[in-house]
Image: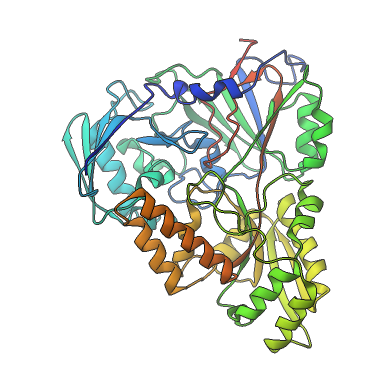
Length: 509
Protein backbone atom coordinates (compact mmCIF):
# COMPACT_ATOMS: atom_id res chain seq x y z
CA UNK A 1 0.00 0.00 0.00
CA UNK A 2 1.17 3.55 -0.63
CA UNK A 3 1.98 5.89 2.22
CA UNK A 4 2.38 9.64 2.17
CA UNK A 5 4.40 11.32 4.90
CA UNK A 6 3.95 15.07 5.18
CA UNK A 7 6.45 16.95 7.27
CA UNK A 8 5.01 18.84 10.19
CA UNK A 9 7.88 21.29 9.92
CA UNK A 10 9.22 23.85 7.55
CA UNK A 11 12.30 24.97 9.43
CA UNK A 12 14.43 23.07 11.94
CA UNK A 13 13.76 25.59 14.70
CA UNK A 14 10.10 24.63 14.55
CA UNK A 15 11.05 20.95 14.67
CA UNK A 16 10.44 20.47 18.37
CA UNK A 17 7.92 23.27 18.85
CA UNK A 18 5.31 20.88 20.18
CA UNK A 19 7.68 19.87 22.94
CA UNK A 20 8.63 23.35 24.05
CA UNK A 21 5.92 23.37 26.69
CA UNK A 22 7.96 20.66 28.42
CA UNK A 23 11.19 22.55 28.16
CA UNK A 24 12.96 25.14 30.14
CA UNK A 25 12.30 28.69 31.12
CA UNK A 26 15.09 31.14 31.63
CA UNK A 27 16.78 33.74 33.75
CA UNK A 28 20.12 35.55 33.77
CA UNK A 29 23.66 34.26 33.38
CA UNK A 30 25.72 35.09 36.45
CA UNK A 31 29.13 34.81 34.75
CA UNK A 32 31.35 37.84 34.26
CA UNK A 33 31.77 39.39 30.81
CA UNK A 34 35.47 38.59 30.43
CA UNK A 35 35.55 34.96 31.52
CA UNK A 36 32.30 33.38 30.43
CA UNK A 37 29.88 33.13 27.53
CA UNK A 38 27.83 36.13 26.53
CA UNK A 39 24.27 35.94 25.29
CA UNK A 40 25.59 35.64 21.73
CA UNK A 41 27.73 32.63 22.57
CA UNK A 42 27.12 29.30 24.23
CA UNK A 43 29.49 26.81 25.84
CA UNK A 44 28.31 23.22 26.16
CA UNK A 45 30.14 20.91 28.53
CA UNK A 46 30.52 17.36 27.20
CA UNK A 47 32.53 14.26 28.02
CA UNK A 48 33.19 12.52 24.71
CA UNK A 49 35.48 14.30 22.27
CA UNK A 50 35.08 13.32 18.59
CA UNK A 51 37.56 10.95 17.00
CA UNK A 52 37.21 12.83 13.70
CA UNK A 53 35.22 15.53 11.92
CA UNK A 54 33.86 13.29 9.17
CA UNK A 55 31.06 11.58 11.04
CA UNK A 56 30.63 9.02 8.29
CA UNK A 57 34.17 7.69 8.71
CA UNK A 58 34.90 8.26 12.43
CA UNK A 59 33.47 5.85 14.99
CA UNK A 60 32.02 7.07 18.25
CA UNK A 61 29.23 9.40 19.33
CA UNK A 62 31.34 12.52 19.90
CA UNK A 63 31.25 13.72 16.29
CA UNK A 64 27.49 13.37 15.80
CA UNK A 65 26.87 15.01 19.18
CA UNK A 66 28.41 18.26 17.95
CA UNK A 67 27.74 18.10 14.20
CA UNK A 68 24.54 16.16 13.47
CA UNK A 69 21.60 18.53 12.76
CA UNK A 70 23.80 21.48 13.78
CA UNK A 71 26.31 21.45 10.91
CA UNK A 72 25.02 18.54 8.82
CA UNK A 73 21.37 18.06 8.03
CA UNK A 74 19.46 15.01 6.88
CA UNK A 75 16.36 14.49 4.78
CA UNK A 76 14.49 13.47 7.92
CA UNK A 77 15.34 13.76 11.60
CA UNK A 78 14.21 12.21 14.87
CA UNK A 79 12.48 14.55 17.28
CA UNK A 80 12.60 14.26 21.06
CA UNK A 81 9.74 11.76 21.09
CA UNK A 82 11.54 9.46 18.66
CA UNK A 83 9.29 10.34 15.72
CA UNK A 84 10.52 11.01 12.19
CA UNK A 85 9.91 14.53 10.88
CA UNK A 86 11.10 16.34 7.78
CA UNK A 87 14.24 18.47 7.65
CA UNK A 88 15.75 18.86 4.17
CA UNK A 89 12.72 16.98 2.89
CA UNK A 90 9.38 18.75 3.20
CA UNK A 91 7.47 15.52 2.59
CA UNK A 92 7.97 12.05 1.19
CA UNK A 93 5.98 9.19 -0.29
CA UNK A 94 6.57 5.44 -0.22
CA UNK A 95 5.66 3.10 -3.06
CA UNK A 96 3.06 0.36 -2.39
CA UNK A 97 5.75 -2.33 -2.37
CA UNK A 98 7.80 -0.37 0.16
CA UNK A 99 10.85 -0.25 -2.11
CA UNK A 100 10.89 3.35 -3.37
CA UNK A 101 10.98 6.54 -1.31
CA UNK A 102 10.44 9.86 -3.10
CA UNK A 103 11.49 13.00 -1.23
CA UNK A 104 10.45 16.56 -2.04
CA UNK A 105 13.28 18.87 -1.00
CA UNK A 106 13.08 22.11 0.91
CA UNK A 107 13.32 24.64 -1.96
CA UNK A 108 15.22 27.24 0.07
CA UNK A 109 17.90 24.89 1.40
CA UNK A 110 21.50 25.80 0.64
CA UNK A 111 24.91 24.60 1.69
CA UNK A 112 27.10 26.89 3.75
CA UNK A 113 28.88 28.15 0.61
CA UNK A 114 25.55 29.29 -0.85
CA UNK A 115 25.12 26.46 -3.37
CA UNK A 116 21.59 25.02 -3.43
CA UNK A 117 20.83 21.62 -1.93
CA UNK A 118 19.61 19.97 -5.11
CA UNK A 119 18.35 16.47 -5.72
CA UNK A 120 21.59 15.69 -7.55
CA UNK A 121 23.60 16.87 -4.54
CA UNK A 122 21.58 14.49 -2.35
CA UNK A 123 22.27 11.65 -4.78
CA UNK A 124 25.99 12.45 -4.97
CA UNK A 125 26.24 12.67 -1.20
CA UNK A 126 24.52 9.34 -0.65
CA UNK A 127 26.63 7.66 -3.32
CA UNK A 128 29.80 9.09 -1.80
CA UNK A 129 28.98 7.74 1.65
CA UNK A 130 27.97 4.35 0.23
CA UNK A 131 31.11 3.88 -1.86
CA UNK A 132 33.76 5.57 0.27
CA UNK A 133 36.13 2.81 1.53
CA UNK A 134 36.60 4.76 4.77
CA UNK A 135 32.88 4.82 5.66
CA UNK A 136 32.33 3.08 8.99
CA UNK A 137 31.15 -0.51 8.96
CA UNK A 138 28.00 0.50 10.84
CA UNK A 139 26.98 3.04 8.21
CA UNK A 140 27.86 0.69 5.34
CA UNK A 141 25.55 -1.89 6.90
CA UNK A 142 22.78 0.70 7.29
CA UNK A 143 23.04 1.71 3.62
CA UNK A 144 23.52 -1.79 2.22
CA UNK A 145 19.79 -1.97 1.47
CA UNK A 146 20.00 0.99 -0.96
CA UNK A 147 19.85 -0.07 -4.60
CA UNK A 148 20.18 3.37 -6.18
CA UNK A 149 19.26 7.03 -5.88
CA UNK A 150 18.02 9.17 -8.76
CA UNK A 151 17.36 12.90 -9.11
CA UNK A 152 13.91 13.08 -10.68
CA UNK A 153 14.34 16.84 -11.11
CA UNK A 154 16.17 19.56 -9.21
CA UNK A 155 13.92 19.28 -6.16
CA UNK A 156 12.82 15.65 -6.01
CA UNK A 157 14.91 12.55 -5.35
CA UNK A 158 13.87 8.90 -5.38
CA UNK A 159 15.80 6.30 -3.43
CA UNK A 160 15.12 2.67 -4.27
CA UNK A 161 15.83 -0.21 -1.91
CA UNK A 162 16.70 -3.80 -2.71
CA UNK A 163 14.04 -4.95 -0.23
CA UNK A 164 11.50 -3.52 2.18
CA UNK A 165 13.12 -2.13 5.33
CA UNK A 166 11.51 -0.74 8.48
CA UNK A 167 14.87 0.43 9.81
CA UNK A 168 16.23 2.24 6.76
CA UNK A 169 14.46 5.56 7.11
CA UNK A 170 15.36 5.76 10.80
CA UNK A 171 19.00 5.22 9.85
CA UNK A 172 18.73 8.10 7.38
CA UNK A 173 18.02 10.39 10.34
CA UNK A 174 21.55 9.72 11.61
CA UNK A 175 25.11 10.06 10.24
CA UNK A 176 24.29 7.64 7.39
CA UNK A 177 21.84 10.19 5.98
CA UNK A 178 23.75 13.45 6.22
CA UNK A 179 23.69 15.50 3.04
CA UNK A 180 27.16 16.79 2.21
CA UNK A 181 28.13 19.47 -0.29
CA UNK A 182 29.82 17.50 -3.11
CA UNK A 183 32.42 20.26 -3.38
CA UNK A 184 33.63 19.32 0.10
CA UNK A 185 34.00 15.54 -0.22
CA UNK A 186 37.81 15.66 -0.19
CA UNK A 187 38.12 17.83 2.94
CA UNK A 188 35.48 16.40 5.28
CA UNK A 189 38.14 15.39 7.79
CA UNK A 190 39.32 18.98 8.23
CA UNK A 191 36.41 21.24 7.26
CA UNK A 192 32.62 21.04 7.27
CA UNK A 193 30.45 21.05 4.16
CA UNK A 194 26.91 20.95 5.45
CA UNK A 195 23.67 22.89 5.19
CA UNK A 196 22.99 23.39 8.89
CA UNK A 197 22.60 26.54 10.98
CA UNK A 198 26.23 26.31 12.13
CA UNK A 199 29.58 25.75 10.45
CA UNK A 200 32.72 24.23 11.89
CA UNK A 201 35.13 26.94 13.04
CA UNK A 202 37.94 25.21 14.90
CA UNK A 203 39.08 22.21 16.93
CA UNK A 204 41.45 22.61 19.84
CA UNK A 205 42.13 18.92 20.30
CA UNK A 206 41.91 17.76 23.85
CA UNK A 207 39.84 20.79 24.77
CA UNK A 208 37.04 21.97 22.52
CA UNK A 209 35.29 22.25 19.16
CA UNK A 210 33.84 25.60 18.12
CA UNK A 211 30.94 26.16 15.74
CA UNK A 212 29.98 29.52 14.27
CA UNK A 213 26.61 30.75 13.08
CA UNK A 214 26.05 30.04 9.39
CA UNK A 215 25.28 33.53 8.10
CA UNK A 216 23.73 32.07 4.94
CA UNK A 217 21.52 29.49 6.60
CA UNK A 218 18.36 28.83 4.64
CA UNK A 219 16.10 28.47 7.71
CA UNK A 220 15.63 30.43 10.89
CA UNK A 221 18.87 32.05 12.02
CA UNK A 222 20.79 30.21 14.72
CA UNK A 223 20.22 31.88 18.06
CA UNK A 224 23.87 31.94 19.15
CA UNK A 225 26.70 33.52 17.23
CA UNK A 226 29.05 30.75 18.33
CA UNK A 227 28.82 27.48 20.22
CA UNK A 228 31.76 25.78 21.85
CA UNK A 229 31.67 22.13 22.93
CA UNK A 230 34.19 21.82 25.77
CA UNK A 231 35.33 18.34 26.73
CA UNK A 232 35.96 17.17 30.28
CA UNK A 233 37.49 13.83 31.21
CA UNK A 234 36.95 14.61 34.89
CA UNK A 235 33.21 14.66 35.68
CA UNK A 236 33.78 16.76 38.79
CA UNK A 237 35.54 19.39 36.68
CA UNK A 238 32.46 19.45 34.44
CA UNK A 239 30.10 20.30 37.29
CA UNK A 240 32.59 22.80 38.71
CA UNK A 241 32.77 24.55 35.31
CA UNK A 242 29.01 25.13 35.28
CA UNK A 243 29.00 26.45 38.83
CA UNK A 244 31.91 28.78 37.97
CA UNK A 245 30.15 30.16 34.91
CA UNK A 246 32.74 28.75 32.49
CA UNK A 247 30.10 26.76 30.61
CA UNK A 248 26.36 27.26 30.12
CA UNK A 249 25.18 23.66 29.80
CA UNK A 250 26.10 20.18 30.96
CA UNK A 251 24.86 18.17 28.01
CA UNK A 252 24.62 14.91 30.00
CA UNK A 253 25.34 14.81 33.71
CA UNK A 254 27.88 12.10 34.52
CA UNK A 255 27.81 12.58 38.29
CA UNK A 256 24.19 12.14 39.40
CA UNK A 257 25.22 12.55 43.03
CA UNK A 258 26.01 16.18 42.16
CA UNK A 259 22.39 17.03 41.29
CA UNK A 260 21.72 18.72 44.62
CA UNK A 261 24.36 21.33 43.76
CA UNK A 262 22.01 22.70 41.09
CA UNK A 263 18.69 22.78 42.92
CA UNK A 264 18.40 26.59 42.90
CA UNK A 265 15.88 27.35 40.11
CA UNK A 266 16.98 30.99 40.06
CA UNK A 267 20.39 29.88 38.79
CA UNK A 268 19.92 26.52 37.06
CA UNK A 269 17.37 24.39 35.27
CA UNK A 270 17.51 20.60 35.33
CA UNK A 271 16.04 18.72 32.37
CA UNK A 272 15.22 15.06 32.95
CA UNK A 273 14.20 12.53 30.35
CA UNK A 274 15.15 9.27 28.78
CA UNK A 275 17.64 8.28 26.12
CA UNK A 276 18.60 5.55 23.70
CA UNK A 277 21.75 4.90 25.70
CA UNK A 278 21.91 1.25 26.71
CA UNK A 279 24.81 0.77 29.13
CA UNK A 280 25.96 -2.68 28.11
CA UNK A 281 28.49 -5.00 29.69
CA UNK A 282 29.50 -6.58 26.43
CA UNK A 283 30.82 -10.13 26.11
CA UNK A 284 33.35 -11.03 23.44
CA UNK A 285 31.72 -14.12 21.97
CA UNK A 286 35.04 -15.09 20.39
CA UNK A 287 36.51 -15.46 23.89
CA UNK A 288 36.57 -19.18 24.73
CA UNK A 289 34.92 -18.98 28.19
CA UNK A 290 32.20 -16.63 26.95
CA UNK A 291 31.16 -18.97 24.16
CA UNK A 292 29.68 -21.06 26.95
CA UNK A 293 26.08 -20.07 27.71
CA UNK A 294 26.38 -21.16 31.34
CA UNK A 295 29.35 -18.83 31.89
CA UNK A 296 27.40 -15.91 30.44
CA UNK A 297 24.37 -16.77 32.54
CA UNK A 298 26.54 -17.08 35.64
CA UNK A 299 27.82 -13.54 35.09
CA UNK A 300 24.27 -12.21 34.81
CA UNK A 301 23.17 -13.98 37.99
CA UNK A 302 26.26 -12.69 39.81
CA UNK A 303 25.59 -8.98 39.17
CA UNK A 304 22.95 -7.08 41.13
CA UNK A 305 21.94 -4.53 38.50
CA UNK A 306 19.65 -2.55 40.81
CA UNK A 307 22.47 -2.18 43.34
CA UNK A 308 24.84 -1.27 40.51
CA UNK A 309 22.50 1.47 39.29
CA UNK A 310 22.10 2.83 42.82
CA UNK A 311 25.84 2.72 43.50
CA UNK A 312 27.23 3.89 40.18
CA UNK A 313 24.53 6.24 38.91
CA UNK A 314 22.66 7.36 41.99
CA UNK A 315 19.60 5.32 41.03
CA UNK A 316 19.09 7.53 37.96
CA UNK A 317 18.20 5.46 34.91
CA UNK A 318 16.04 2.50 33.96
CA UNK A 319 16.65 -1.25 34.23
CA UNK A 320 15.84 -2.76 30.84
CA UNK A 321 17.11 -6.36 30.40
CA UNK A 322 17.61 -6.16 26.63
CA UNK A 323 18.80 -3.76 23.91
CA UNK A 324 15.53 -1.82 23.69
CA UNK A 325 14.66 1.54 25.31
CA UNK A 326 11.07 2.32 26.40
CA UNK A 327 10.69 4.84 23.55
CA UNK A 328 10.77 2.00 20.99
CA UNK A 329 7.37 0.44 20.14
CA UNK A 330 8.68 -3.10 20.69
CA UNK A 331 9.92 -2.48 24.23
CA UNK A 332 8.99 -4.78 27.09
CA UNK A 333 10.52 -4.93 30.54
CA UNK A 334 12.90 -7.91 30.66
CA UNK A 335 14.98 -6.58 33.54
CA UNK A 336 13.94 -9.32 35.97
CA UNK A 337 14.62 -12.31 33.73
CA UNK A 338 17.96 -12.83 35.50
CA UNK A 339 17.65 -12.08 39.20
CA UNK A 340 20.60 -11.58 41.52
CA UNK A 341 21.53 -15.10 42.63
CA UNK A 342 25.22 -15.66 43.45
CA UNK A 343 24.61 -19.29 44.48
CA UNK A 344 23.12 -20.06 41.09
CA UNK A 345 26.04 -18.26 39.44
CA UNK A 346 28.52 -20.51 41.28
CA UNK A 347 26.58 -23.62 40.30
CA UNK A 348 26.53 -22.62 36.62
CA UNK A 349 30.28 -21.96 36.68
CA UNK A 350 30.82 -25.40 38.16
CA UNK A 351 28.68 -27.00 35.47
CA UNK A 352 30.64 -25.09 32.83
CA UNK A 353 33.93 -26.50 34.14
CA UNK A 354 35.15 -23.45 36.03
CA UNK A 355 34.67 -24.58 39.62
CA UNK A 356 38.25 -23.50 40.38
CA UNK A 357 37.69 -20.03 39.00
CA UNK A 358 38.05 -17.97 35.86
CA UNK A 359 40.04 -14.86 34.92
CA UNK A 360 38.72 -12.30 32.42
CA UNK A 361 40.04 -8.98 31.07
CA UNK A 362 37.82 -5.90 31.09
CA UNK A 363 39.18 -2.83 29.25
CA UNK A 364 36.75 0.09 29.57
CA UNK A 365 36.77 3.69 28.35
CA UNK A 366 37.79 6.23 30.96
CA UNK A 367 34.24 7.51 31.44
CA UNK A 368 32.73 7.66 34.90
CA UNK A 369 29.75 5.36 34.27
CA UNK A 370 32.01 2.75 32.59
CA UNK A 371 34.78 2.77 35.18
CA UNK A 372 32.30 2.79 38.05
CA UNK A 373 30.30 -0.08 36.59
CA UNK A 374 33.47 -2.06 35.85
CA UNK A 375 34.72 -1.78 39.43
CA UNK A 376 31.30 -2.76 40.79
CA UNK A 377 31.05 -5.75 38.45
CA UNK A 378 34.60 -6.89 39.24
CA UNK A 379 33.84 -6.89 42.97
CA UNK A 380 30.64 -8.91 42.51
CA UNK A 381 32.15 -11.42 40.10
CA UNK A 382 35.01 -12.01 42.52
CA UNK A 383 32.44 -13.28 45.01
CA UNK A 384 31.49 -16.14 42.68
CA UNK A 385 35.01 -17.04 41.60
CA UNK A 386 35.60 -14.86 38.54
CA UNK A 387 38.63 -12.59 38.66
CA UNK A 388 38.23 -9.52 36.47
CA UNK A 389 41.20 -7.38 35.49
CA UNK A 390 39.86 -3.88 34.83
CA UNK A 391 41.88 -1.70 32.43
CA UNK A 392 40.89 1.98 32.17
CA UNK A 393 41.66 3.52 28.77
CA UNK A 394 41.13 6.79 26.95
CA UNK A 395 38.33 6.47 24.45
CA UNK A 396 40.53 6.41 21.34
CA UNK A 397 42.52 3.49 22.79
CA UNK A 398 39.29 1.68 23.64
CA UNK A 399 38.04 2.21 20.07
CA UNK A 400 41.26 0.70 18.69
CA UNK A 401 41.68 -2.22 21.08
CA UNK A 402 38.10 -3.23 21.85
CA UNK A 403 35.83 -1.86 19.14
CA UNK A 404 38.11 -2.39 16.15
CA UNK A 405 40.40 -5.27 17.18
CA UNK A 406 38.08 -7.16 19.53
CA UNK A 407 40.90 -7.59 22.05
CA UNK A 408 38.95 -8.09 25.29
CA UNK A 409 36.74 -10.47 27.27
CA UNK A 410 34.32 -8.04 28.95
CA UNK A 411 33.78 -4.32 28.53
CA UNK A 412 31.25 -1.61 29.43
CA UNK A 413 30.08 1.15 27.14
CA UNK A 414 26.96 3.23 26.52
CA UNK A 415 25.38 2.54 23.10
CA UNK A 416 23.48 5.67 22.14
CA UNK A 417 22.44 5.04 18.54
CA UNK A 418 18.69 4.60 17.92
CA UNK A 419 17.45 1.13 16.94
CA UNK A 420 20.90 -0.31 17.64
CA UNK A 421 19.50 -3.74 18.52
CA UNK A 422 20.21 -4.62 14.88
CA UNK A 423 23.95 -4.60 15.58
CA UNK A 424 23.57 -7.93 17.32
CA UNK A 425 22.84 -9.42 13.90
CA UNK A 426 26.32 -8.46 12.65
CA UNK A 427 28.83 -11.12 13.71
CA UNK A 428 31.67 -8.79 12.70
CA UNK A 429 30.60 -6.15 15.21
CA UNK A 430 32.86 -6.07 18.24
CA UNK A 431 30.66 -8.45 20.28
CA UNK A 432 31.11 -11.14 17.57
CA UNK A 433 27.67 -12.44 18.44
CA UNK A 434 26.20 -14.91 15.95
CA UNK A 435 22.80 -16.38 16.74
CA UNK A 436 20.94 -17.69 13.67
CA UNK A 437 17.56 -17.45 15.41
CA UNK A 438 18.12 -13.81 16.31
CA UNK A 439 19.49 -12.98 12.86
CA UNK A 440 16.42 -14.49 11.20
CA UNK A 441 14.04 -12.58 13.48
CA UNK A 442 15.75 -9.26 12.76
CA UNK A 443 15.73 -9.88 9.01
CA UNK A 444 12.08 -10.92 9.07
CA UNK A 445 11.09 -7.95 11.20
CA UNK A 446 12.85 -5.46 8.95
CA UNK A 447 10.97 -6.82 5.93
CA UNK A 448 7.64 -7.35 7.69
CA UNK A 449 4.68 -6.12 5.60
CA UNK A 450 2.92 -4.42 8.53
CA UNK A 451 3.93 -2.44 11.60
CA UNK A 452 2.16 -4.92 13.87
CA UNK A 453 4.18 -7.83 12.48
CA UNK A 454 7.36 -5.79 12.76
CA UNK A 455 6.72 -5.07 16.44
CA UNK A 456 5.85 -8.68 17.25
CA UNK A 457 9.01 -10.02 15.60
CA UNK A 458 11.18 -7.39 17.26
CA UNK A 459 9.84 -8.36 20.68
CA UNK A 460 10.81 -11.96 19.95
CA UNK A 461 14.29 -10.85 18.92
CA UNK A 462 14.75 -8.84 22.11
CA UNK A 463 13.75 -11.87 24.17
CA UNK A 464 16.33 -14.01 22.39
CA UNK A 465 19.10 -11.60 23.41
CA UNK A 466 17.92 -11.86 26.99
CA UNK A 467 17.48 -15.62 27.22
CA UNK A 468 20.76 -16.25 25.41
CA UNK A 469 22.60 -13.96 27.83
CA UNK A 470 24.10 -12.16 24.85
CA UNK A 471 25.30 -9.41 27.20
CA UNK A 472 24.50 -7.92 30.56
CA UNK A 473 22.23 -4.97 29.80
CA UNK A 474 23.06 -3.00 32.93
CA UNK A 475 20.71 -0.03 32.62
CA UNK A 476 19.33 2.60 30.28
CA UNK A 477 21.18 5.88 30.59
CA UNK A 478 18.99 8.76 31.77
CA UNK A 479 19.12 12.08 30.01
CA UNK A 480 19.93 14.67 32.64
CA UNK A 481 20.98 18.06 31.32
CA UNK A 482 21.66 21.10 33.49
CA UNK A 483 21.96 24.65 32.26
CA UNK A 484 21.98 28.26 33.31
CA UNK A 485 18.41 29.28 34.04
CA UNK A 486 18.39 31.74 31.14
CA UNK A 487 18.80 28.96 28.57
CA UNK A 488 15.66 27.38 27.14
CA UNK A 489 14.87 24.71 24.60
CA UNK A 490 16.82 21.63 25.67
CA UNK A 491 14.93 18.55 24.49
CA UNK A 492 13.85 16.37 27.44
CA UNK A 493 14.70 13.09 25.70
CA UNK A 494 18.01 12.28 24.03
CA UNK A 495 16.91 9.82 21.34
CA UNK A 496 19.72 10.51 18.87
CA UNK A 497 23.44 11.03 19.30
CA UNK A 498 22.97 14.72 18.37
CA UNK A 499 22.95 17.50 20.95
CA UNK A 500 20.49 19.48 18.90
CA UNK A 501 21.24 23.21 19.14
CA UNK A 502 18.44 24.30 16.83
CA UNK A 503 15.86 24.62 19.62
CA UNK A 504 18.04 26.46 22.12
CA UNK A 505 17.62 30.11 23.02
CA UNK A 506 18.55 32.63 25.70
CA UNK A 507 16.52 35.50 27.13
CA UNK A 508 19.64 37.64 27.33
CA UNK A 509 19.81 38.17 23.58
